[in-house]
Image (cartoon, rainbow, N blue to C red; front, side, top):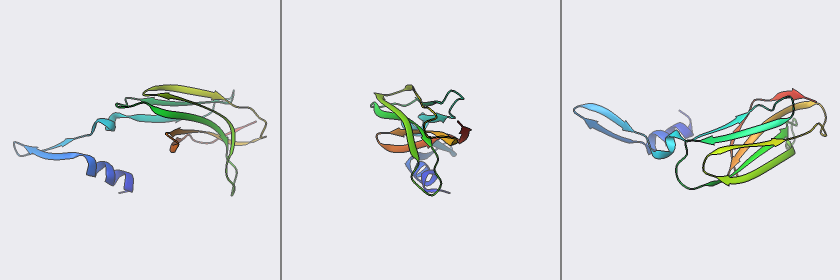
Length: 119
């Protein structure tokens, strides 16, 4: 079990009702963050849905994967919302290579899309 899974299990409420184990998930369990593969038009899209609570700083980046070095940010945008989608359009200024969408919430890495060869 990885650390995230262990923390998620530890944060859930456990109990019994009539001898049946009942697991209650916390409110944030339904929160989903996704990063779509960049399109052929170099558009990266991130989505946050089903999230309760306060709005977060949400950032979407179009990045070039660079082996053995920090990846190259090509384009990015950000906003503040509770739930929604955000897109950014990059370009081929960094040349041919593997590109991906990187989504961050409140400055922390959330999720990356699979890489796609572009340019």
